[in-house]
Image (tube, rainbow, N blue to C red):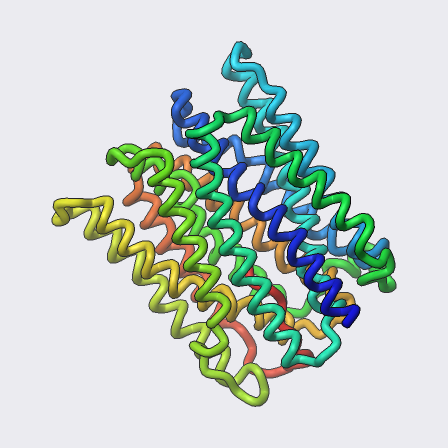
Length: 411
């Protein structure tokens, strides 16, 4: 019962954090777009957010192993509160250069907060599971799907808050909510949860197998392929086609919620094997091939201007992309621990999600640059190229050497 209790506390805490994280992304993007910021400048606002995430994942995994998961969860929540308050202190009278710098720093704080909290929370699933691999898989599926659904609600909440109460009051409201969550974590979780003997050196921390390195590299291109159109290209495209704040936020929210629901059922969609790899790797290659084709086809259709309502075409096409992407994302997240087999689960998760953060960073930068250069079609071609590289790495994955069957939560 103690494991279930701790799992529920961690899940509820991460839900609250994820809600503010999604809302913050939408608040910043829409608020500064209406102030006249270019697509590339919008992308730079998230530069430190994603860069910090790479190191926060690696360091967060090591720190959670050394000091315990609850302590790092508390640190992540406190950093998010600080980032929200820092951003709320921005003065509209400041010049553009200073304003951009201030937002980048505030987003950097939130980026560290997000990835420390994520690594700690996802590592807690393994630490609290008491019923073996079957229970672990069910807990992972629920945590993953509900987390991404909550982020979708956050996107929508960000658009609603911006339209109803404005930028600064929305930030204060979210900070106040997280203060209450932080109090619950401090008083409810055992301090020793997740503690283990941490790696003694950075060399040991990075000493991963060839298979883990390959799947982590594939993860970079997989998540870059999503964010290259998702972060800047799509919202700007929809807003330019006459959509309102709430409509833009509503679609992005619905896409993310649907993505989370598909992740939750992904195990029933993928053909499974007793050894954990012989069918799963061919499935990753098959789904990867389908996913690679989708943005390429959609880019051709958008550029050909054959649809009377291009926004509707994009919405339908990217919804199909979201279904396939959710399945392969879950499958990749399974494969990393199927290959890894390390007792230091937090460090393994941290290494893998450092690659995830690197992919998001690459995608965000390309999203701003490609949107400014060629609009959404250029972003879609960039997505297809990144997926082709991801697919090539998937074909290089070894089919044996399975040492562990635990499944991490998907992003």
